Image 1 (cartoon, rainbow, N blue to C red):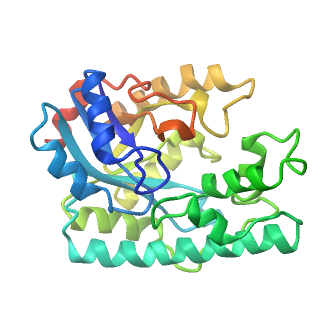
Image 2 (cartoon, helix red, strand yellow):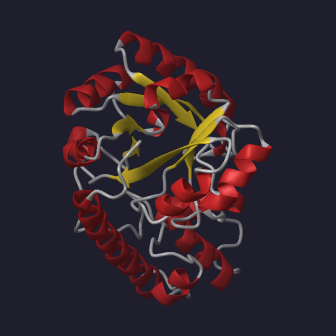
Length: 290
């Protein structure tokens, strides 16, 4: 088995890239990819540590793209695999992306405090990250830690929705790559653009949406994914259905359109109830990335 969707402490995971490699080796995985959110800060450690280990390590990234409801691009993510982390253009673009992410999270914290009465500050949130990248899970962590009475009876999923697109405290990013720009950036580094977790998106026609993505330059798609343990299906009556339905559906889509198949657990360490390798991604996929 392999796992091509992992997060480290360089973004919102709990383990370093080296620790991810050691765990993957213990699990007898043949290959892993590090795909941190909007950052490549962990890739140097991943590649250098992985060189002497009996495992294939693939440098990657997960890019959050601009919110465009008119094109049904709502909270869509693109994974880039086999990227060149030394690319000057990539580094410059990602630095701007990180700035936009930080300003957005600051604004969300202000809304939570000023409009909704939460005891929260961006400084509190930043303190729990241990990295330059601040994500929504970090904000939820402080919402729960600092406001036990206010969040009583509310699930993590409910709090996450509050600060996500369409949520009461959501704020759009001012600086963010659009769909085509993200794909072109990944390709400019020699990487392969993969549509992440396609089953979670709320689109009017899933097959037509994939056609749109292909026309925009997407070359691959995540087939295997931990749908039952991720939004919007986690802790709902649709969790088991999603886990059974979507991998089979998108495997057929990938075959129909000759797309590169990928997959991964979306492992974040102890931040989610997901295990590395849990998506059961077949190692035959790795041929497309070598």
